[in-house]
Length: 175
Image (cartoon, rainbow, N blue to C red; front, side, top):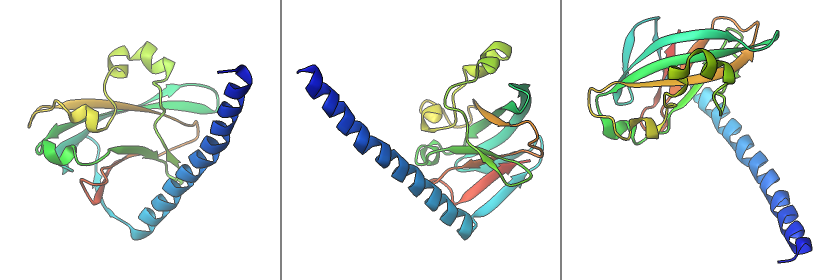
């Protein structure tokens, strides 16, 4: 195939892919806005306590604030789940977010931040929350997971929010 033809095919693919990515993200935001409007039941769990949720017993192990820049911090959240019903856990897709006192939502970073790999290499190797984390889990076995987030330095009163659409109609919130 000629270079000119390859160029035009790639350019056409880009013209199709970028708007599609925008539409998908906008649709997720609209759906999430509708989700917030319907106000799913929230299970609020205080520090150190465990809670039954979406086919498992969940517990927040630690939330650490790590330096990044003067105006941003990395938050490392470690949590675990002991499956009580692995079939239920495999039905849904885990979604984890941080919410601050102002209601701002922070999604986990796609790749583990370098400071996490440097300071906590054993935590950086833990699986992220999702179906893959529970594929080999047996009932009662503990699955330890970790997610990292980038938040503004002034973000306060962070809570970890775990949702399992398809497996539970509730939202688990660790304060």
